[in-house]
Length: 259
Image 1 (spheres, rainbow, N blue to C red):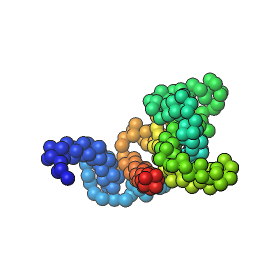
Image 2 (image 1 turned 60 degrees about the vertical axis):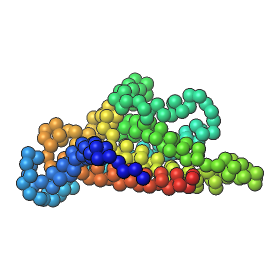
Image 3 (image 1 turned 135 degrees about the vertical axis):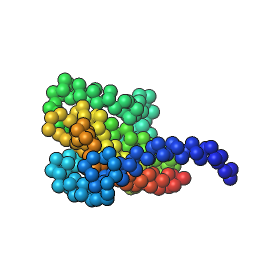
Image 4 (image 1 turned 90 degrees about the vertical axis):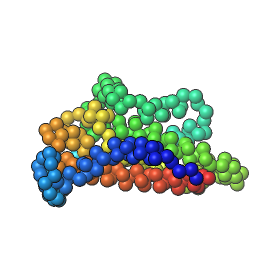
């Protein structure tokens, strides 16, 4: 095995430091015993106690979890169907329609959904509009993962099920579904993490009176970046990291199975 050059290691170290050093500073200063982040004063857990006694923040967290759970569950069902359709049928524009929300800039998607909800559906912006918006951009992620999983399976498995007299529903229930279940779970975790962290699309579709964790953090940092903001950001990063690791492990599991 060829050893990487010192310059390559140095460049990689600088890139990772640029990416993760700001996150490490946010985590460290969430324990700072000072109302301002100007300098380190001492270690404390008071800001986490303040956070868990903040009614507005707890309401925003509840809204974020509810939106993320509902949107990811719905997107998993619809994304699985879309992934199966892309794998089975060779419609030219079907992948384009499914994957476009993934590649589209968030600000463009947010404005488009805002106009669609207000002018086409005459829908009052609120929790429903946010959930619908999150489902829209999450479907593509689930569909991609499910399609990759189906692409790695041997078609002879499904042909054998049909030769043995299984109906299309029985084939899906006893053969297809167990094989794509890890991919569905990985897609759902990915959709949950993306929905939980989303700010731009939520900002355009939330309306008055609906607050999520990203929106609440944004409203707080307009005044000052206090250690309470660092505390909630740390917990949000930790939850997102856990979800990403879980999705990655599931992804590796079904990729080994496909191999």
